[in-house]
Image (cartoon, rainbow, N blue to C red; front, side, top):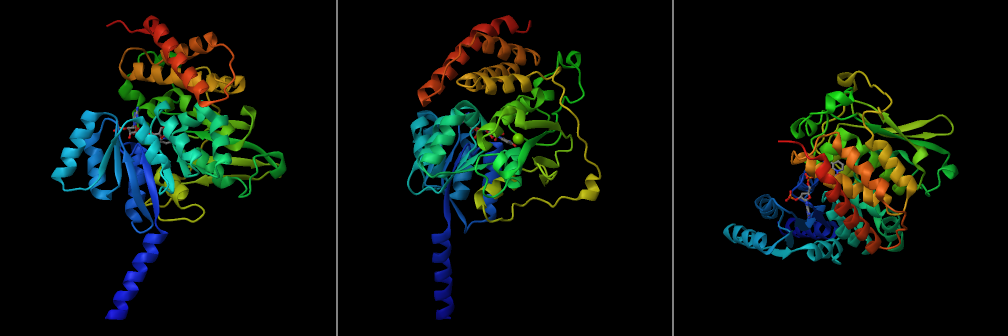
Length: 413
Ligand code: NDP
Ligand code: MG
């Protein structure tokens, strides 16, 4: 009937007006595809503004065909040509943009409501910062961006009325366990410390000698989470926990000593906050990134994330142990970098990226990763970080240094 048709049209308008535009930076990755899965479950609530990729152009175009974004972003002209051909074949109308400026543009365009920052590594910094500077809701998975430029990034969020929702499962759990009106001051809320949980990675309980000749394939085989290669290696070295310690300090405005790393092999508790009355508040769940992603997208509401419910009887027990700093020195290297401040976290991150890449390329051993980082950190002069150029210069310097130290670690073959 006519009134029914009118009602449907009304509903349609209500929904499209209510729907929010999301840009997914790093849409072809592990976090990117989990984000698109949440979008897929809520087509009226979220519409895709832009998707970006790097090497996986065909996958990016497939996602564009499914989600009809206004833009996709690829790194080179030749990738753009490939993408345009595939889009034409599929009769999909979508503009293809190229390069880093385009990444920043689709993260900051006026129509965009939220940006999933899920590019891996330092490459994500500039577009993620652009989202913060233009007052978006920033869904932060790209922890390296925050580690590199913490104080600048947090300032950009505050100055531009942006919203920062941590997607890293631990930080999402901490966010959920913090008071809703958390001001950035532990004492004011009776907070004693953050308990940052760590699975321990694939090499938990191994000794240094066991680790001498582990392969990239062994390192990326994470027991609980399925993730991109770089973060999987970081989990194996415990550098991931080091980066997360720095991430927690910047996000929640605390000292490194106020964050205690707790190895919890089941990865059921995603992190906790301890209060001065003896309470400890935790968030528990499946090791499925769609939970923190959906939380960040819908906050302060909650939406279905497609994640199966936690069965505590199935889990039956939870274990907690101290981290092994002897075997996994990266955690303390990261803590020291945060405490030294200035450009040190950016330097730590850059050298780690070079080291992980060299390990994945079977150029250096697993144990060379912390050695290389420690060497460059020792050679690094103290320096303040006051603007983005300082961060980018530190990143470049550290990559150059790492490259000059690298030959001494090269494996014989
Ligand atoms: P993936 O390697 O699966 O995905 C990385 C994404 O970044 C891909 O879309 C990739 O494009 C893109 N990319 C890579 N290099 C560049 C570059 N130079 N310029 C532009 N884009 C680039 O990583 P994850 O999804 O696992 O991780 C993404 C981020 O989220 C990381 O910072 C990680 O630490 C963080 N994170 C991930 C978690 C997880 O469970 N996976 C958990 C918590 C945090 P392409 O694939 O087309 O080459
Ligand atoms: Mg994490």
